[in-house]
Amino acid sequence: MNPRDLELLSAYLDGQLNSSDSARLESRLASDESLRTALDNLRSTRGLLRQLPSRRAPRNFTLTPQMAGIKPPTPRLVPVFRFATAFATFLFIITFVINGLISLSAPSFAAAPAPSVYSAAAPLSASQESAPAAPAPALPLAAIVPTETSSPRLMSAAPMLTQTPMSSGAGASPAETSTPEIALKSNAPQVDHTQSENVQRNESSLPFDFEILFGILAVGFGITAWILPKNNERSFRKKWNKK
Amino acid sequence: MDEPALIQSAQRGDLDAFNTLVLHYQDALFNTALRILGDDDLAADATQDAFLSAFQHLNSYRGGSFKAWLMRTVTNACYDELRRKKRRPTTPLEPDTDDGDEMDSPRWLADPHLTPEGQAEADELEHAIQHCLDALPVEFRAVVVLADLQGLDYTEVAAAIHAPLGTIKSRLARARIRLQECLQGFAELLPAAFRLQEERS
Image (cartoon, rainbow over all chains, first blue to last red; front, side, top):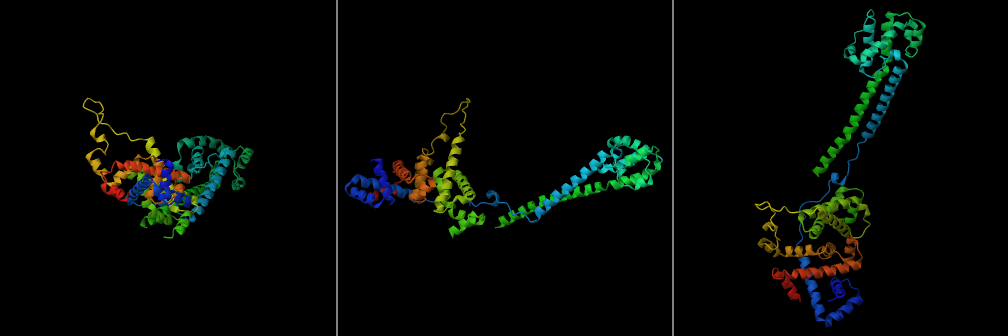
């Protein structure tokens, strides 16, 4: 049997022939025994295939949000915390830079503006060693000063103490950058002013407090912004699994 | 089941709606994959891949028979599985003899259809048909599975296979003839099935 006739028989079996082709084939079938046998064989084969038992799916193929790549909606507070983190980080950097600039522009106060915990303590220890006559404020921070960082500051602080006259007027000025100019006017060392100088430096280290505050806020907001979606996702999955 | 509404919801990302459709069609997709691949595990993998792909590309469904559209995804998943299988063919570990040489024809590597157990399995209609389906070229197999096992009409098969209607007609006719010839070899093993043929002829 030629392939064309087989195609015709197969399509006829499925009712896919148009009426004219169908009528032509039927007239041939009436007269052609082999064509009828071929059609019956095809019908039997199709019948066998249709008898093939349908299996049940071995498991459910439903998708989980994880499989489908669906993420739970972001909690509304997350963007707020993200913005707060960015803002606190920005303020932290600003205070960090300001402190850095202060320390660079006033090398004689190198000990004061260092952007770290020991920065406030450095001048205190410096004054203790370079001016033993001065009353040394016993601050606990001095105890944690690392020796390697305090040593160079001692060197830079020593000439300053011998050169800074610190009149009472100058002492009232909070501007650190103006202090070296005043110091140049007089060469007389005034050890008695060391304490007021320390107070000044403590005042000048106010940004340092802000630095810590902004740093803590940035970390706190950041952790919150990170934890919130995680918790939300966990509860979303729990809720989905309960379904 | 309001299928159009479920499809619309699923297209908007409603996973619950999509999973309702999954539960409705999973048997059909699994059976299609099983008959094309001839392996339960591969068929399950292909079915899962097909549903995942269907969800991801649901927006490309533009109406018409949703079953045919799903059949297209499962057929593609089957082709992928077959390509993967071809790339990484599983080579059986051949046992060594006492001399350290590989055994040429260990008993357990023999054709399962030739063993008594295999013969017994081949007695069953399902195994005989699956055996003959496996012998078909994959493009013929897909057409005959979709048309005769899943009951899709020619237009739906053409959409699922992404081939012209004439190709579908031709492949289906040739697949049926090949299956018929193959099943003749099981005539004695499958008397009930072929009695049906005899009665009709």
